[in-house]
Image (cartoon, rainbow, N blue to C red; front, side, top):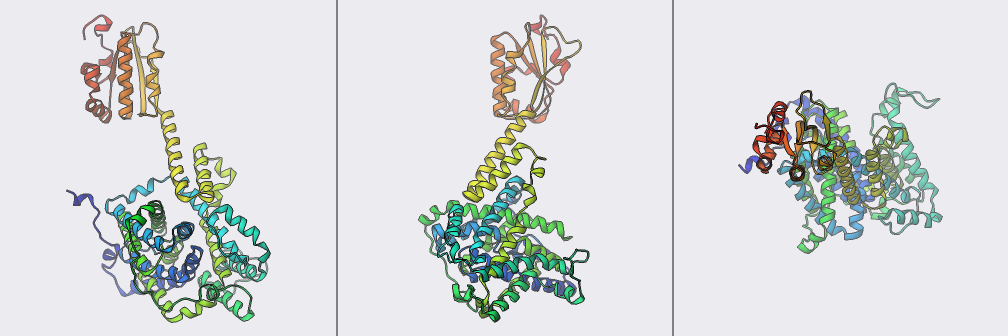
Length: 564
């Protein structure tokens, strides 16, 4: 009985390998190689922006990328460090330190695995879309703000995670502005924006540019890789005075780090409850959103959300042993994987192997990568990450006041305060607006019934009678016309009633009894009727006064001068 309530651990890879042939293997290898090359600059950029070393981002992409593909519930999702985690990870490192980040990552992995095991993957879909848009756009703003330091070449020894502190630091150190860094960062952003247009047929090019055959061929290379290689060469050849990975971090080790368990104690675990929940919540939302995007752009079988969460959990439990950072599904790499022709999780595994091969063979070359170029890549990621059209006044005015308040409030709180605070208050606000809206949809209106006996008042009730709508039931006694001897609540369109609704009817019955008026209920559907019977309300009112139809409720009774 218990086991039936738990989700079986069955990776999508098992089903994908059925009927697997050489043609699919070739397609997956090609897609994996493409995604692996694309993932390299992103992994380094995300790690540096998160306040850790670039090799920690790469090892996360390798280990988590392999585990999420091998154990996940999606055929094409690619996992690794994600832009959405940058602000959270940076804040945890600044406040709790790197060791506690590793512990919090592992604990969030346990939480993610349990969520999937208990089949709670679908619960993530209940997060309102306006909250998701609000915190996603807020994270994009914070990512862009955090990269201005490197794009402008400012000499800021320590950057705070606080929004206003970052702005203050940028203003205070504006005198250290480096034009060379701005040139590299600006070229990177412009190149990434222009690069896809060079080979997409039908896309207009700037005036004077022609789409030659060579340009079309070159344009098929991933934009971030082209930007990284070309700008690294330009920086080295021109000997530009800007900071590189080598000057800040001393390069990237040629190989994977030694396995080491982070020191764990219950004292530290208790301090990390909020960071752990934040990482797990954001990881679950991001991975399942990414999987849904993959389902939309792919013709392969739909993802299993619970298996995906369990895979994310395993990955985040294992990654800290290698010194890695939190990982989740990544939309950009997943879409690249699909467009490159991936047919199974094998492509994601090849992507991880590609990254490992690059580290083993070419890690020393990464020391020459300019940080301004990586910052430019992240600025472009932040721009694409945000759904800015949602903030357009004309677009916002199409929606209700509640939608606008939740969207803008979540965005503001994410930027100024904290993601967890933003999500918590966003959910509370969404619940308040939902309760208010459902309360306004509930109706209890007098209706005229031809041939009804004198002294009988019929109220047509429809909607959901819950704690947010009980006031409309409680006020019925005050609105009865003089001479009323029987009040009939016609409930054929009552879809649901909760304990507060039952109590409101109980109080109405007590009030009416004191005034000599009887209360009848009629035409209850199955669920409201079961609630009335379970709570004993039928015994209080009288089972003969729970009528199956309106005609029975209108039949003459003792209060009308005749026996029923």
